[in-house]
Image 1 (spheres, rainbow, N blue to C red):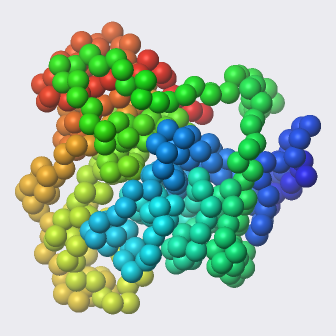
Image 2 (image 1 turned 135 degrees about the vertical axis):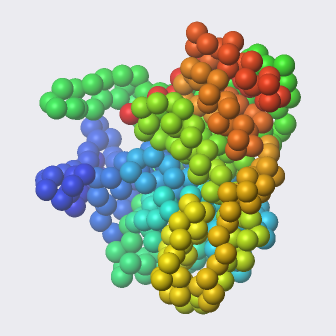
Length: 386
């Protein structure tokens, strides 16, 4: 099949809508549900990300996509008890592929609500059982176990979107798109991201640990498929904060840094011990934690959420806890024009950076890195994505 009619385009009024391919079959098969325009943009962008991330790390990879940018991306590293708790994965038997998706979805659960799940490897029963409980629009993977497919087909009243990707499909070198009746054409961005991108290290500290190299590759590949401008913080084989689509780079750094801070603050004992009512749903719990970390008060609504009104997490307590966050890696899809980005990154525990380089103020950026003993690589690669 080389053509597929869709429910509608970006919005319900944009009909008819379809996807098609010339001189070939579509590279995916619909196993269940009916795809929409944005579903397929998420699926195909996300597939490229996880395919490349797996190739770079030799680990199963996953992404959680929303509105054509990743809310999270990760490789299949195991989870400790605290991460299992904050990702709501306690009691689950997790394969490496499942661990990758749990990490990808868990880093920013607010943004991942209603996501499109992307897997590099077969969707097994452990992935399907985790997704079954979550609010998600669909999934794409190269294959499914029989049991996993059965579980997913029962989700959302039988309408959960399940796509099977042809892992052998290779797109043509030239890509096109139309905007306002004008056709754009360019060479596909097939630049390879590998450890060779980290060879040029202009800072005094030139030591990238193996974990930092893995995390920098994770961050760079994530940015390759994130709407620009974009910045990504990573730790433990996963993105922990993604700033996408900002016009100012320092705003990207702040946005992603705030998300990374919230990711770590969720692991604070005071947050882990919040006295939630037993019947609170996971999305409501996520929202409540976000409000709590933001310093807002619950006023009269606290009784609907908690058994007792929780004591606030003070600014001093936040600062004290965040001092424990170290070893974070940061990547940018283009050069940092000012040292203010490094100053903000340092506040979120960044010790390793990969960025394009080439700013007229590179000396200032390098000097700021040296001030905090941060190791930074110039990749000489720009990763704008639109």
